[in-house]
Length: 540
Image (cartoon, rainbow, N blue to C red; front, side):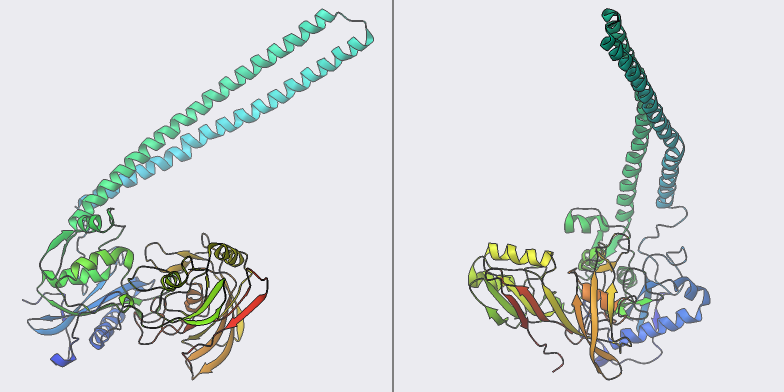
Protein backbone atom coordinates (compact mmCIF):
# COMPACT_ATOMS: atom_id res chain seq x y z
CA UNK A 1 0.00 0.00 0.00
CA UNK A 2 1.38 3.39 -1.02
CA UNK A 3 1.68 5.83 1.93
CA UNK A 4 -0.63 8.84 1.81
CA UNK A 5 2.18 11.43 1.78
CA UNK A 6 3.74 9.93 -1.38
CA UNK A 7 3.34 12.07 -4.52
CA UNK A 8 3.85 10.31 -7.82
CA UNK A 9 5.34 12.22 -10.72
CA UNK A 10 2.89 12.86 -13.55
CA UNK A 11 5.47 11.69 -16.12
CA UNK A 12 7.30 8.43 -16.68
CA UNK A 13 10.93 8.19 -15.62
CA UNK A 14 13.49 5.87 -17.16
CA UNK A 15 16.14 4.24 -14.99
CA UNK A 16 18.89 6.11 -16.82
CA UNK A 17 17.39 9.38 -15.53
CA UNK A 18 18.03 8.35 -11.93
CA UNK A 19 21.24 9.35 -10.14
CA UNK A 20 23.87 6.67 -9.61
CA UNK A 21 24.33 7.65 -5.95
CA UNK A 22 22.25 9.30 -3.27
CA UNK A 23 22.70 13.02 -2.64
CA UNK A 24 25.42 14.17 -0.26
CA UNK A 25 23.26 16.52 1.82
CA UNK A 26 26.18 18.80 2.77
CA UNK A 27 27.46 19.53 -0.74
CA UNK A 28 25.33 18.93 -3.79
CA UNK A 29 23.90 20.26 -7.01
CA UNK A 30 20.20 19.35 -6.96
CA UNK A 31 19.39 16.48 -9.32
CA UNK A 32 16.89 17.36 -12.10
CA UNK A 33 14.29 15.12 -10.46
CA UNK A 34 14.77 17.00 -7.19
CA UNK A 35 14.25 20.28 -9.02
CA UNK A 36 11.04 18.95 -10.59
CA UNK A 37 9.81 17.69 -7.23
CA UNK A 38 10.57 21.08 -5.70
CA UNK A 39 8.63 22.79 -8.51
CA UNK A 40 5.61 20.59 -7.79
CA UNK A 41 5.88 21.36 -4.08
CA UNK A 42 6.06 25.10 -4.83
CA UNK A 43 2.92 24.87 -6.98
CA UNK A 44 1.13 23.04 -4.16
CA UNK A 45 2.14 25.77 -1.70
CA UNK A 46 1.00 28.54 -4.05
CA UNK A 47 -2.36 26.81 -4.53
CA UNK A 48 -3.00 26.69 -0.78
CA UNK A 49 -3.60 30.25 0.42
CA UNK A 50 -3.43 29.40 4.12
CA UNK A 51 -0.23 27.41 3.70
CA UNK A 52 1.40 30.08 1.54
CA UNK A 53 0.58 32.69 4.17
CA UNK A 54 1.99 30.51 6.95
CA UNK A 55 5.22 30.00 4.98
CA UNK A 56 5.59 33.61 3.84
CA UNK A 57 7.87 34.58 6.72
CA UNK A 58 10.36 32.00 5.52
CA UNK A 59 10.89 28.27 5.98
CA UNK A 60 13.26 25.55 4.82
CA UNK A 61 11.43 22.96 2.73
CA UNK A 62 12.73 19.64 1.49
CA UNK A 63 11.91 17.00 -1.12
CA UNK A 64 13.05 13.39 -1.29
CA UNK A 65 12.72 11.51 -4.56
CA UNK A 66 11.83 7.89 -3.78
CA UNK A 67 10.87 4.63 -5.46
CA UNK A 68 7.68 2.91 -4.31
CA UNK A 69 5.67 -0.05 -5.55
CA UNK A 70 3.81 2.40 -7.81
CA UNK A 71 6.93 3.90 -9.33
CA UNK A 72 9.04 7.02 -8.86
CA UNK A 73 7.69 9.93 -6.83
CA UNK A 74 8.61 12.19 -3.97
CA UNK A 75 7.75 13.13 -0.42
CA UNK A 76 7.99 16.64 1.05
CA UNK A 77 8.81 18.09 4.46
CA UNK A 78 9.29 21.38 6.26
CA UNK A 79 11.66 22.14 9.12
CA UNK A 80 10.25 22.85 12.56
CA UNK A 81 6.72 24.16 12.87
CA UNK A 82 4.39 25.83 10.37
CA UNK A 83 1.40 27.67 11.76
CA UNK A 84 1.87 26.12 15.21
CA UNK A 85 1.68 22.65 13.65
CA UNK A 86 4.28 19.90 13.35
CA UNK A 87 2.08 17.91 11.00
CA UNK A 88 0.22 19.30 7.97
CA UNK A 89 -1.34 17.56 4.96
CA UNK A 90 0.91 16.99 1.93
CA UNK A 91 4.05 16.97 4.12
CA UNK A 92 5.51 13.99 5.98
CA UNK A 93 4.78 13.94 9.71
CA UNK A 94 7.43 14.76 12.32
CA UNK A 95 9.62 11.97 13.66
CA UNK A 96 8.03 12.63 17.03
CA UNK A 97 5.12 15.03 17.51
CA UNK A 98 6.17 16.88 20.63
CA UNK A 99 3.14 19.18 20.32
CA UNK A 100 0.58 16.39 20.75
CA UNK A 101 -1.93 17.75 23.33
CA UNK A 102 -1.76 14.65 25.51
CA UNK A 103 2.03 14.28 25.29
CA UNK A 104 4.45 14.57 28.17
CA UNK A 105 6.32 17.38 26.41
CA UNK A 106 3.31 19.70 26.39
CA UNK A 107 2.81 19.03 30.11
CA UNK A 108 6.52 19.64 30.75
CA UNK A 109 6.41 22.87 28.78
CA UNK A 110 3.38 23.92 30.81
CA UNK A 111 5.30 23.33 34.05
CA UNK A 112 8.30 25.23 32.69
CA UNK A 113 5.96 28.06 31.77
CA UNK A 114 4.61 28.13 35.32
CA UNK A 115 8.13 28.27 36.73
CA UNK A 116 9.04 31.06 34.33
CA UNK A 117 5.95 33.00 35.34
CA UNK A 118 6.68 32.41 39.03
CA UNK A 119 10.27 33.59 38.66
CA UNK A 120 9.23 36.62 36.63
CA UNK A 121 6.53 37.53 39.16
CA UNK A 122 8.94 37.32 42.12
CA UNK A 123 11.49 39.43 40.26
CA UNK A 124 8.88 42.02 39.28
CA UNK A 125 7.25 42.28 42.70
CA UNK A 126 9.10 40.99 45.76
CA UNK A 127 12.62 41.43 44.46
CA UNK A 128 11.91 44.80 42.90
CA UNK A 129 10.41 46.04 46.20
CA UNK A 130 13.26 44.60 48.26
CA UNK A 131 15.86 46.12 45.96
CA UNK A 132 14.13 49.49 46.18
CA UNK A 133 14.13 49.22 49.98
CA UNK A 134 17.87 48.61 49.98
CA UNK A 135 18.44 51.54 47.63
CA UNK A 136 16.22 53.83 49.74
CA UNK A 137 17.98 52.84 52.98
CA UNK A 138 21.40 53.38 51.39
CA UNK A 139 20.29 56.85 50.28
CA UNK A 140 18.76 57.69 53.69
CA UNK A 141 21.87 56.43 55.45
CA UNK A 142 24.11 58.51 53.26
CA UNK A 143 22.04 61.62 54.04
CA UNK A 144 22.03 60.86 57.80
CA UNK A 145 25.78 60.29 57.84
CA UNK A 146 26.40 63.49 55.92
CA UNK A 147 24.23 65.53 58.30
CA UNK A 148 25.86 63.98 61.38
CA UNK A 149 29.36 64.60 59.98
CA UNK A 150 28.41 68.21 59.25
CA UNK A 151 27.12 68.72 62.81
CA UNK A 152 30.27 67.11 64.26
CA UNK A 153 32.44 69.33 62.10
CA UNK A 154 30.64 72.45 63.37
CA UNK A 155 31.12 71.40 67.02
CA UNK A 156 34.78 70.61 66.39
CA UNK A 157 35.26 74.02 64.82
CA UNK A 158 33.69 75.59 67.94
CA UNK A 159 35.99 73.59 70.24
CA UNK A 160 39.00 74.67 68.19
CA UNK A 161 37.88 78.31 68.54
CA UNK A 162 37.52 77.96 72.31
CA UNK A 163 40.96 76.38 72.57
CA UNK A 164 42.50 79.25 70.63
CA UNK A 165 40.79 81.78 72.94
CA UNK A 166 42.34 80.07 76.00
CA UNK A 167 39.08 80.42 77.91
CA UNK A 168 37.79 76.84 77.99
CA UNK A 169 37.45 73.67 80.03
CA UNK A 170 39.73 71.28 78.12
CA UNK A 171 38.39 68.16 79.81
CA UNK A 172 34.86 69.16 78.96
CA UNK A 173 35.89 69.66 75.30
CA UNK A 174 37.55 66.24 75.26
CA UNK A 175 34.45 64.59 76.72
CA UNK A 176 32.32 66.33 74.08
CA UNK A 177 34.59 65.08 71.31
CA UNK A 178 34.54 61.53 72.65
CA UNK A 179 30.78 61.70 72.99
CA UNK A 180 30.41 62.80 69.35
CA UNK A 181 32.61 59.94 68.13
CA UNK A 182 30.76 57.38 70.22
CA UNK A 183 27.39 58.66 69.03
CA UNK A 184 28.62 58.53 65.41
CA UNK A 185 29.69 54.90 65.81
CA UNK A 186 26.31 54.03 67.32
CA UNK A 187 24.61 55.77 64.42
CA UNK A 188 26.71 53.83 61.88
CA UNK A 189 25.92 50.60 63.71
CA UNK A 190 22.18 51.28 63.72
CA UNK A 191 22.18 52.32 60.07
CA UNK A 192 24.24 49.29 59.00
CA UNK A 193 21.96 46.98 60.98
CA UNK A 194 18.95 48.38 59.17
CA UNK A 195 20.70 48.10 55.81
CA UNK A 196 21.95 44.58 56.50
CA UNK A 197 18.44 43.48 57.41
CA UNK A 198 17.09 44.79 54.10
CA UNK A 199 20.03 43.30 52.18
CA UNK A 200 19.45 39.91 53.81
CA UNK A 201 15.79 40.09 52.77
CA UNK A 202 16.95 40.71 49.20
CA UNK A 203 19.44 37.84 49.46
CA UNK A 204 16.67 35.51 50.69
CA UNK A 205 14.57 36.42 47.67
CA UNK A 206 17.55 35.82 45.35
CA UNK A 207 18.12 32.43 46.93
CA UNK A 208 14.47 31.57 46.34
CA UNK A 209 14.79 32.68 42.71
CA UNK A 210 17.96 30.61 42.26
CA UNK A 211 16.22 27.56 43.74
CA UNK A 212 13.41 27.97 41.22
CA UNK A 213 15.92 28.46 38.40
CA UNK A 214 17.75 25.28 39.40
CA UNK A 215 14.44 23.42 39.41
CA UNK A 216 13.67 24.89 35.99
CA UNK A 217 17.06 23.82 34.64
CA UNK A 218 16.69 20.30 36.06
CA UNK A 219 13.21 20.01 34.61
CA UNK A 220 14.34 21.37 31.26
CA UNK A 221 17.27 18.93 30.99
CA UNK A 222 15.07 16.01 32.03
CA UNK A 223 12.42 17.08 29.54
CA UNK A 224 14.97 17.34 26.73
CA UNK A 225 16.40 13.90 27.53
CA UNK A 226 12.94 12.32 27.58
CA UNK A 227 12.04 14.13 24.35
CA UNK A 228 15.16 13.15 22.42
CA UNK A 229 14.85 9.56 23.59
CA UNK A 230 11.48 9.49 21.81
CA UNK A 231 13.20 10.33 18.52
CA UNK A 232 13.96 6.77 17.41
CA UNK A 233 15.78 7.25 14.12
CA UNK A 234 16.09 4.70 11.34
CA UNK A 235 18.74 4.15 8.69
CA UNK A 236 18.83 2.22 5.42
CA UNK A 237 20.25 -0.83 7.17
CA UNK A 238 17.25 -1.05 9.47
CA UNK A 239 19.16 0.07 12.56
CA UNK A 240 17.42 2.20 15.19
CA UNK A 241 19.06 4.77 17.47
CA UNK A 242 17.77 7.62 19.61
CA UNK A 243 18.90 11.20 19.21
CA UNK A 244 20.52 11.05 22.65
CA UNK A 245 22.58 8.02 21.64
CA UNK A 246 23.70 9.64 18.39
CA UNK A 247 24.88 12.86 20.03
CA UNK A 248 26.41 11.09 23.01
CA UNK A 249 28.68 9.24 20.58
CA UNK A 250 29.26 12.40 18.56
CA UNK A 251 30.25 14.90 21.25
CA UNK A 252 29.15 13.48 24.59
CA UNK A 253 26.44 16.13 24.97
CA UNK A 254 22.68 16.45 24.68
CA UNK A 255 21.37 17.19 21.18
CA UNK A 256 20.86 20.90 20.45
CA UNK A 257 17.36 22.34 20.51
CA UNK A 258 15.15 21.33 17.56
CA UNK A 259 17.50 18.50 16.53
CA UNK A 260 15.60 15.93 14.50
CA UNK A 261 13.02 18.46 13.29
CA UNK A 262 14.81 19.56 10.13
CA UNK A 263 13.40 18.54 6.76
CA UNK A 264 16.11 16.03 5.79
CA UNK A 265 15.78 13.69 8.83
CA UNK A 266 11.99 13.80 8.54
CA UNK A 267 12.14 12.79 4.88
CA UNK A 268 14.48 9.87 5.43
CA UNK A 269 12.57 8.64 8.49
CA UNK A 270 9.31 8.60 6.56
CA UNK A 271 10.90 6.79 3.62
CA UNK A 272 12.45 4.06 5.76
CA UNK A 273 9.29 3.60 7.85
CA UNK A 274 7.15 3.22 4.71
CA UNK A 275 9.47 1.05 2.63
CA UNK A 276 10.31 3.80 0.15
CA UNK A 277 13.76 3.69 -1.46
CA UNK A 278 15.54 7.10 -1.23
CA UNK A 279 16.96 8.20 -4.59
CA UNK A 280 17.83 11.91 -4.31
CA UNK A 281 17.16 14.78 -1.92
CA UNK A 282 17.32 18.56 -1.71
CA UNK A 283 16.37 21.36 0.69
CA UNK A 284 15.39 24.84 -0.43
CA UNK A 285 14.24 28.09 1.12
CA UNK A 286 10.72 29.40 0.71
CA UNK A 287 9.64 32.95 1.54
CA UNK A 288 11.33 36.06 2.84
CA UNK A 289 14.96 35.97 3.85
CA UNK A 290 15.58 36.12 7.62
CA UNK A 291 16.96 39.37 9.00
CA UNK A 292 20.34 37.89 9.96
CA UNK A 293 20.85 34.77 7.85
CA UNK A 294 21.23 34.86 4.08
CA UNK A 295 18.49 32.88 2.36
CA UNK A 296 17.08 33.30 -1.18
CA UNK A 297 13.58 32.29 -2.16
CA UNK A 298 13.49 28.86 -3.89
CA UNK A 299 17.29 28.45 -3.69
CA UNK A 300 18.76 25.13 -2.57
CA UNK A 301 21.00 24.89 0.50
CA UNK A 302 23.04 22.18 2.23
CA UNK A 303 21.84 20.59 5.43
CA UNK A 304 22.96 22.28 8.65
CA UNK A 305 26.11 20.81 10.19
CA UNK A 306 25.50 21.50 13.87
CA UNK A 307 22.25 19.57 14.17
CA UNK A 308 21.98 17.43 11.06
CA UNK A 309 25.50 16.17 10.40
CA UNK A 310 25.55 13.67 13.30
CA UNK A 311 21.93 12.67 12.58
CA UNK A 312 22.37 12.17 8.85
CA UNK A 313 25.70 10.46 9.41
CA UNK A 314 23.65 7.68 11.04
CA UNK A 315 20.53 7.83 8.86
CA UNK A 316 22.45 7.60 5.57
CA UNK A 317 24.24 4.40 6.58
CA UNK A 318 23.28 1.72 4.09
CA UNK A 319 22.88 4.14 1.17
CA UNK A 320 25.48 4.68 -1.54
CA UNK A 321 26.07 8.40 -0.96
CA UNK A 322 27.96 10.82 -3.20
CA UNK A 323 31.33 11.90 -1.78
CA UNK A 324 31.67 15.40 -0.38
CA UNK A 325 33.96 17.42 -2.66
CA UNK A 326 35.08 19.42 0.38
CA UNK A 327 36.66 16.28 1.78
CA UNK A 328 38.93 15.77 -1.19
CA UNK A 329 42.65 16.47 -1.03
CA UNK A 330 43.63 19.56 -2.97
CA UNK A 331 45.64 19.03 -6.12
CA UNK A 332 47.72 22.13 -6.72
CA UNK A 333 50.68 24.05 -5.45
CA UNK A 334 51.37 27.36 -3.79
CA UNK A 335 53.14 29.72 -6.18
CA UNK A 336 55.87 31.83 -4.56
CA UNK A 337 55.28 35.55 -5.10
CA UNK A 338 57.92 36.92 -2.69
CA UNK A 339 60.50 35.39 -0.38
CA UNK A 340 63.36 36.46 1.88
CA UNK A 341 64.82 35.21 5.16
CA UNK A 342 61.79 36.48 7.13
CA UNK A 343 58.79 36.03 4.85
CA UNK A 344 57.31 33.69 2.27
CA UNK A 345 54.35 35.13 0.35
CA UNK A 346 52.39 32.66 -1.77
CA UNK A 347 49.54 32.64 -4.24
CA UNK A 348 47.27 30.05 -2.58
CA UNK A 349 45.09 28.02 -4.95
CA UNK A 350 41.36 27.75 -4.42
CA UNK A 351 40.56 24.61 -2.43
CA UNK A 352 43.65 24.61 -0.24
CA UNK A 353 43.41 25.28 3.49
CA UNK A 354 45.45 28.10 5.00
CA UNK A 355 45.93 26.18 8.25
CA UNK A 356 45.00 22.61 9.28
CA UNK A 357 41.23 22.29 9.56
CA UNK A 358 38.21 20.05 9.46
CA UNK A 359 39.28 17.98 6.43
CA UNK A 360 42.31 15.76 6.00
CA UNK A 361 44.21 17.81 3.45
CA UNK A 362 47.58 19.54 3.30
CA UNK A 363 47.46 23.23 4.20
CA UNK A 364 49.76 26.15 3.52
CA UNK A 365 50.85 25.92 7.16
CA UNK A 366 51.80 22.24 6.67
CA UNK A 367 53.87 23.06 3.60
CA UNK A 368 55.56 26.02 5.32
CA UNK A 369 56.55 23.98 8.38
CA UNK A 370 58.01 21.23 6.23
CA UNK A 371 60.13 23.80 4.42
CA UNK A 372 61.06 26.25 7.17
CA UNK A 373 60.37 24.67 10.56
CA UNK A 374 58.69 27.39 12.65
CA UNK A 375 56.94 29.08 9.72
CA UNK A 376 53.22 29.84 9.98
CA UNK A 377 50.66 32.01 8.07
CA UNK A 378 50.19 35.50 9.49
CA UNK A 379 46.53 35.59 8.40
CA UNK A 380 44.04 33.29 6.70
CA UNK A 381 42.11 32.91 3.48
CA UNK A 382 39.01 30.72 3.23
CA UNK A 383 39.72 27.33 1.70
CA UNK A 384 37.75 28.26 -1.44
CA UNK A 385 39.43 31.68 -1.79
CA UNK A 386 42.61 31.99 -3.84
CA UNK A 387 45.29 34.65 -3.69
CA UNK A 388 48.04 36.23 -1.64
CA UNK A 389 48.87 34.78 1.75
CA UNK A 390 51.80 35.91 3.94
CA UNK A 391 53.79 33.28 5.86
CA UNK A 392 56.23 34.28 8.62
CA UNK A 393 59.33 32.10 8.89
CA UNK A 394 59.95 32.64 12.62
CA UNK A 395 57.86 33.40 15.74
CA UNK A 396 59.12 36.99 16.11
CA UNK A 397 58.22 37.85 12.53
CA UNK A 398 54.83 36.20 13.02
CA UNK A 399 54.18 38.33 16.11
CA UNK A 400 55.20 41.54 14.31
CA UNK A 401 53.08 40.83 11.24
CA UNK A 402 50.01 39.88 13.25
CA UNK A 403 50.36 43.13 15.15
CA UNK A 404 50.13 44.98 11.82
CA UNK A 405 46.91 43.13 10.99
CA UNK A 406 45.46 43.94 14.42
CA UNK A 407 46.26 47.63 13.96
CA UNK A 408 44.80 47.52 10.42
CA UNK A 409 48.08 48.63 8.93
CA UNK A 410 47.93 45.95 6.23
CA UNK A 411 46.07 46.94 3.05
CA UNK A 412 44.13 44.11 1.40
CA UNK A 413 42.37 44.10 -1.93
CA UNK A 414 40.24 41.31 -3.33
CA UNK A 415 38.50 40.86 -6.63
CA UNK A 416 35.31 38.85 -7.10
CA UNK A 417 32.68 38.01 -9.66
CA UNK A 418 29.17 38.39 -8.24
CA UNK A 419 26.03 36.90 -9.73
CA UNK A 420 24.17 40.08 -10.54
CA UNK A 421 24.74 43.24 -12.55
CA UNK A 422 25.34 45.91 -9.89
CA UNK A 423 23.66 49.25 -10.45
CA UNK A 424 25.87 51.16 -7.98
CA UNK A 425 29.47 51.75 -9.05
CA UNK A 426 30.97 51.98 -5.57
CA UNK A 427 30.13 52.24 -1.92
CA UNK A 428 30.73 51.01 1.61
CA UNK A 429 29.06 48.06 3.37
CA UNK A 430 28.91 48.08 7.16
CA UNK A 431 27.20 44.97 8.55
CA UNK A 432 28.41 43.55 11.91
CA UNK A 433 29.01 39.80 11.90
CA UNK A 434 28.89 36.99 14.43
CA UNK A 435 29.27 33.22 14.17
CA UNK A 436 26.01 31.37 13.61
CA UNK A 437 26.58 28.77 16.34
CA UNK A 438 23.69 26.61 15.13
CA UNK A 439 25.00 26.47 11.56
CA UNK A 440 28.78 26.43 11.67
CA UNK A 441 30.79 27.53 9.73
CA UNK A 442 28.21 30.14 8.69
CA UNK A 443 28.41 33.74 9.86
CA UNK A 444 25.39 36.00 10.23
CA UNK A 445 24.62 39.69 10.52
CA UNK A 446 23.86 40.74 14.09
CA UNK A 447 23.33 44.45 14.70
CA UNK A 448 23.34 44.02 18.50
CA UNK A 449 26.11 41.51 19.27
CA UNK A 450 28.04 41.35 16.00
CA UNK A 451 31.60 42.60 15.56
CA UNK A 452 32.22 45.57 13.30
CA UNK A 453 32.71 44.52 9.67
CA UNK A 454 33.31 47.13 6.94
CA UNK A 455 33.96 46.59 3.23
CA UNK A 456 34.49 49.14 0.44
CA UNK A 457 33.61 48.06 -3.10
CA UNK A 458 34.12 49.35 -6.62
CA UNK A 459 32.81 47.90 -9.89
CA UNK A 460 35.58 47.08 -12.38
CA UNK A 461 33.53 45.56 -15.21
CA UNK A 462 30.62 43.41 -16.28
CA UNK A 463 30.14 39.96 -17.77
CA UNK A 464 26.95 40.05 -19.79
CA UNK A 465 23.74 41.05 -18.04
CA UNK A 466 24.08 38.92 -14.92
CA UNK A 467 27.61 39.16 -13.53
CA UNK A 468 29.85 41.94 -12.24
CA UNK A 469 33.58 42.06 -11.60
CA UNK A 470 33.97 43.98 -8.35
CA UNK A 471 36.95 45.10 -6.27
CA UNK A 472 36.55 44.55 -2.54
CA UNK A 473 38.62 46.30 0.11
CA UNK A 474 37.92 44.94 3.60
CA UNK A 475 38.58 47.48 6.35
CA UNK A 476 38.13 44.76 8.97
CA UNK A 477 39.01 41.09 8.88
CA UNK A 478 35.99 39.05 9.98
CA UNK A 479 35.42 35.44 9.00
CA UNK A 480 33.53 35.19 5.68
CA UNK A 481 33.19 38.99 5.68
CA UNK A 482 33.35 39.49 1.92
CA UNK A 483 31.10 36.54 1.17
CA UNK A 484 28.38 37.71 3.59
CA UNK A 485 28.66 41.36 2.57
CA UNK A 486 28.26 40.37 -1.08
CA UNK A 487 25.29 38.06 -0.54
CA UNK A 488 23.32 39.90 2.15
CA UNK A 489 20.29 41.94 0.98
CA UNK A 490 21.68 44.97 2.84
CA UNK A 491 25.09 44.48 1.19
CA UNK A 492 25.53 43.94 -2.54
CA UNK A 493 22.58 41.52 -2.59
CA UNK A 494 24.64 39.55 -5.10
CA UNK A 495 26.37 36.36 -3.91
CA UNK A 496 29.86 35.67 -5.16
CA UNK A 497 29.70 33.17 -8.01
CA UNK A 498 30.54 29.68 -6.80
CA UNK A 499 29.73 30.41 -3.16
CA UNK A 500 28.24 27.16 -1.81
CA UNK A 501 27.54 28.65 1.63
CA UNK A 502 25.90 31.98 0.89
CA UNK A 503 25.04 31.62 -2.79
CA UNK A 504 21.86 30.60 -4.54
CA UNK A 505 22.61 26.87 -4.74
CA UNK A 506 23.75 24.13 -2.39
CA UNK A 507 26.66 23.45 -4.71
CA UNK A 508 28.31 24.97 -7.72
CA UNK A 509 30.12 23.55 -10.69
CA UNK A 510 32.71 26.32 -10.51
CA UNK A 511 35.13 27.46 -7.84
CA UNK A 512 34.47 30.42 -5.58
CA UNK A 513 35.19 33.49 -7.69
CA UNK A 514 37.05 35.37 -4.96
CA UNK A 515 40.76 36.18 -5.13
CA UNK A 516 43.10 38.11 -2.83
CA UNK A 517 44.72 40.25 -5.51
CA UNK A 518 46.81 42.81 -3.69
CA UNK A 519 48.43 43.18 -0.27
CA UNK A 520 50.58 45.97 1.15
CA UNK A 521 52.46 45.88 4.46
CA UNK A 522 55.54 47.15 6.28
CA UNK A 523 58.41 44.69 6.20
CA UNK A 524 58.90 43.48 9.80
CA UNK A 525 62.71 43.62 9.58
CA UNK A 526 63.61 46.38 7.12
CA UNK A 527 60.69 48.77 7.66
CA UNK A 528 60.22 49.01 3.89
CA UNK A 529 56.66 49.26 2.57
CA UNK A 530 56.00 46.18 0.42
CA UNK A 531 53.20 45.92 -2.15
CA UNK A 532 52.51 42.60 -3.88
CA UNK A 533 49.94 41.65 -6.50
CA UNK A 534 48.59 38.48 -8.07
CA UNK A 535 46.03 38.50 -10.84
CA UNK A 536 43.26 35.89 -10.58
CA UNK A 537 42.80 33.08 -13.05
CA UNK A 538 39.05 32.87 -13.02
CA UNK A 539 38.23 35.50 -15.62
CA UNK A 540 41.09 35.06 -18.03
